[in-house]
Length: 440
Ligand code: SF4
Image (cartoon, helix red, strand yellow):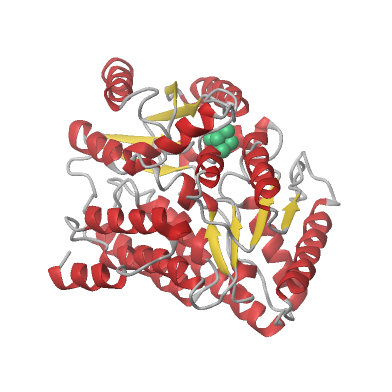
């Protein structure tokens, strides 16, 4: 990164962000310092920094902040000029800097759950709030998926803060007519909830929903979805043309700025850069030897380090994690009703919802397609201890994947959000053993 660019963003981050955004400001500075040594993908990095800055600025500009989970796109929020704050940007974003650990300890000390019962993906929010260090939004929104752990943490936060809250129920069955799990009520169910949510937002923010702005947002959303689908296709190339974390950032942008012009620009940039690499026959990892599928979440406390280590030690590229494998296709949106349908489709198929919201077959099919389409050599699941439903899902899936494709899987317990539970060295040890004794 050029010094001028670094200094520009250092300066933009200065000044008071307010006490409740102090930790987000710390993350911003941490990200900026991590980016300092990077000289590729500058445009996405700039977009990440702008997202952090927009959160810090929202209060000063008098814009309402709505907190939402990592598995819901912010299109309605941008349509209504609300500032989205993806909750996990806070509670998980702290993990690579170990800044979540004091709040996990505090949550333990006050008796608010522990690692095996409540997932540390969102638990730091409660400890941080009790210590006056968490951002308190004007509005709160959450879903019934992917797990009870997340829903409970959000409900506790709602109860502690008294922030007006809307909760959306995500249905179990499929909306595709060719699915054995098809249920004809699903689309209506989710569209009705989306429309009720819009009415709720109108009431809470005292503004009228602007249909034209909504349609423009959906057009932009479609465009960005299209670029990501092309990017996903490009990743099938051998050698893989993009570094291991690239897909993850697509998800990050869609979850923070989906439906905006910035999201269109940054997803197009990533698609174009990746296409150039394919055209030139260049792989992101020199002399690629192993293609890893990561059909669950990152070990977040590692930041990019674990993937970098895999790339450098084993010439192994991690194609995408479950969030980064964003699978919502562009939709037909020629009229308003189709826009609502497209919004609903996006909700049902969002990263970690489409594959995890119903019968285990959804997840099995997702993994089988992933292994075959991307010619994977192995799959790795780092499972959070509280994530018991996904543990079961991963076990069943790994057996079926091995039977049908011969591809081996590594499943291991850890806390992706707390480096003290299973430390980096132990995680690297498990992965090394698997790669050296099973994969190679
Ligand atoms: S890792 Fe598992 S338990 Fe934790 S938030 Fe995600 S789905 Fe829930």
